[in-house]
Image (cartoon, rainbow, N blue to C red; front, side, top):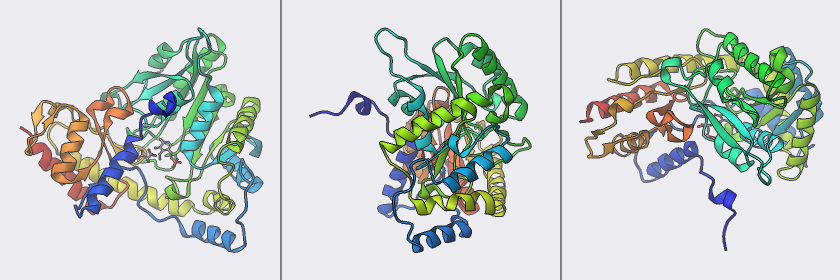
Length: 416
Ligand code: PMP
Ligand code: GLU
């Protein structure tokens, strides 16, 4: 008996794999410092926990409405209109899911068709390095990724001209993720407007159906001088932008599994209706007592979110300053999200103290874990160019950052 070709060809998530490996070493009594999974170390703010407990105690234990209850969808729609400036979003444009990851999976399924007959495959443009799950999700939905390759010298940001060149008549969508996982950088409002102008131009000429998928999961973790701006607030592309977000990162709620997608205008309402059908045939809805925490998070937890962001800003600086002192590591200044993404390729071709040859980021990460017990994510699965880099999250305590980067420093100094 065999598995489907789709599932057999699917790559496991490397971000989740590294943390599983670190946990396994820990279970053998080895003290591993992990900078692998991008998840806040903070506990979810108290008002959110209280709201969930109160809802459970009140007996909210039954199936909830598939796209989310009216109250939580309206809280999300209101946030998107008032805080993000996205026009024409009502609760009918919003579908709540079990995480931003699931919303993205649904969006790709709602947009893409696998090639039929001699049709060319549908293309999704992805500036890389990019988060590990976009490409497998596009592949599962039957599309192909067209990479736009960026580098550390440009803070890993795609130029409008690069995007213009990547668009073909088969382009269905472009994924933007600002602030970016894994790069830890973000586009300025002007840079986003310039990219939006390219998409609007393509929509008016070669690609009338092109859609922007804007993954804004790190919107609250802004570390540099630029303010956050939602792509969907740019008038020329508002009605073709799907915004994906969730509570995992901003509210330290990774384990709760809350995400959402929202469109705007007529197309936004139709994709939300399509995703509601998809979800109705798969997971149904997230638990009702968790839905009740959404308005509380969005409306009552600004102070806690700001305090966590302040902590990430400080930790990011501590990590960046320490990384900068390591010979031949090129690392853009983290300006958003909670990742440093140094290029370690200057050390390829060397051998570690433990006798391991370092020819790629995966070799670097494996040797670092085995010899110094520091877990980082090797860049390979983040796309072309990322194979030179390792990702280290600073969503962890300062002491761990200081000790961990010290071990990375010692590791690099031991390379011959
Ligand atoms: N997008 C990006 C860029 C991410 O880093 C993640 C991983 N946490 C997600 C989406 C999905 O997060 P979640 O499913 O926890 O909402
Ligand atoms: N997104 C986080 C990360 O990149 C969590 C793991 C995952 O879902 O990929 O580490």
